[in-house]
Length: 163
Image: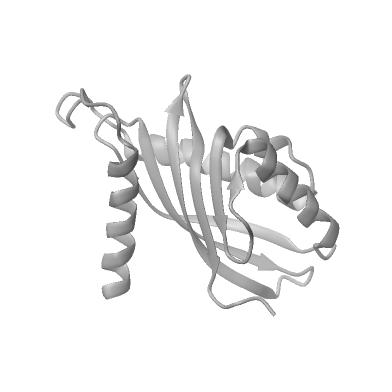
């Protein structure tokens, strides 16, 4: 129970800390379709997942904002889209062939105006026989820029430390 409260509190703080618009519309001003927004985020996750599994960066380029930051367990902070992609490309050289990653959205929290979305999710890395090797969780903060969502902050951690 305490873990759930901590996760919800952290996600709420992420949305509040990044909201710099003093003229934010209230939820009564805008009708948001949570299902439609989750579908948009899931499409981004699917393209990201496919790119990682194919070891290319095509789907990753649209995922991150130019000023994105990633916080990944055991790695330095990724500052900016170019640095994040460079780090992922380095990971491709050491990743075992055939391993696949998958992402699942557990929940999304949407700001009143729909301009920001916090995604709470899980990931799984499996080998070629679909045996689970690593599982973990992530938070991702998306902002709507030029009509589409992009990830501006991301925190990723495995359930257990890597060997």
